[in-house]
Image (tube, one colour):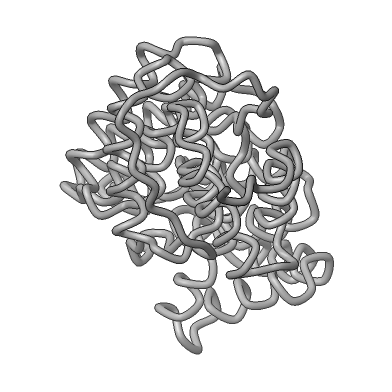
Length: 290
């Protein structure tokens, strides 16, 4: 059966500084180099959505196990595979790939997802697209951007054939991440523009667009894009981090402080808060009014 098609919800933070120009600061701010790295949140949240949609089915139980005990789930998925053949093997391969991803075995996870895609019915384009997208993400996590890009192109073709715009947008976002990893920023910007049309409510697409625009020196575009990301996901820590970087580069230190402090206040123990504290430390104590 086709897998449910659900977008990844994002998590943790606050942002909203206004950027209207100004000199770039002299601080040595580390780049938030997205969208070049793997996006582990995507697979975890997607699996949670798939578990909820699958309910008490064998797939739902297997995916739930992939999160709770991935090592045991590898064995369970392999047992399920031995009981199936043909198109029926696509779902146990999906579960196997998910469990392997959760233990960081990216190469074997990619192989499982690809095997599932190839086993799926030729006309089940949604399932083929989802499995291809997961394979591409595994390749990205394994630092194999060229292979990821090719796999994701096939996945995008399946998603377009299925006429599922939100899934198409997700895959276009992943393709942009692969293109950035290959230092093909202009192509990545074009891919993200397509993603914003396909999936305009996907906050991750707007966040990565803002990050890439900022890296390319287009601060006005970056500000507009991060504002949209913040509107769509006002509790996302990475959006708050990026908003602060854009503000600081545009010479708006007070706005940057406010954005980064909001990340710390929202989730003090998060990785985003750790980065925000490092940024605030570089700024030093806030000057008191005379």
